[in-house]
Amino acid sequence: MLDDVDAFLLHLATERGLSDNYQILVRRVLERFALWSRNERGKTSVAAVETVDLSDYLMHRKGTDGLAASSVRLELVALKIFFRWLNVRGKRVGDPADAILPPKLEQWLPDTLNEPQMKQLVESVSGDATLDIRDRAMLELMYASGLRVGEVTSTRLESLSLEEGWIRVTGKGNKTRLIPVGGAARDALQRYLDGSRPALVNAKTQSWIFLNRNGGKLTTARIWQIVKERSKLAGLDADKIYPHLLRHSFATHLLQGGADLRVIQEMLGHADISTTQIYTHVDQTRLKAVHHKFHPRP
Image (cartoon, rainbow, N blue to C red):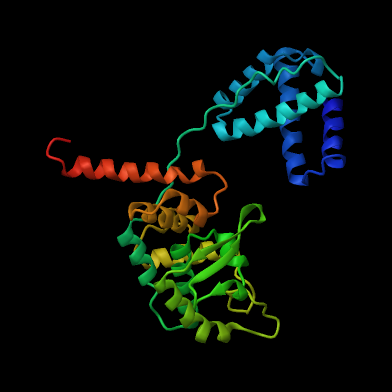
């Protein structure tokens, strides 16, 4: 079976041009299954594998190994493309993985800050120091436009129009989108661009919007640190606050304010509306909590 795994990985590398990371992931999955198949079922050939073997293996991964449903789905995808390739190449008869359905994903609701907490975080950064002004502008923009942390680091000055109130970002899948920038964020950004950013610029500085103290581009790791540090200084639970939480809060607060789900989808850059619909569940949870707290017969 391991020889077939090697041949399949060679196919992925040479004929399909898939990334090294994906190839490593698939190899780990297939080698783990080959080891389990040999030890638990005494099967060392791909021709001997049946649907029940694959099903039992995935149940083992979920139950005994404690894999989340999302991780089990990834392993199933790797097994499916492997056995489909074996069948097409005539290395076995039939595809034992074809009949297996992916496990249902667990319902997951994103954490958010409520509006007073979000105001507390942003407005706590009120100093006149260069980095205070930079951090205030960055937090205002992340909350105003729902940017991913990678989009914050990679967006350049030429993509920002404060006069028109727009920012152009390139997100997942190399897709570009225009997002409105609210008034508070525009004011904070103008203050940063007028005084603080020029103080950070040096001869090697490029046109990234947000710069570190040495004039280089802020990294995602540093933004994580800034959000944690500013949350702690604001008196919030910094252990539970991270950059993506501002994006979740942006979407949730828009929905609570009556924004259309399709508009939120477009601003977040979600390819599928089902990804955006998770925020409707967050809003429903809030409504239920309010009903339970205030209704005379909850």
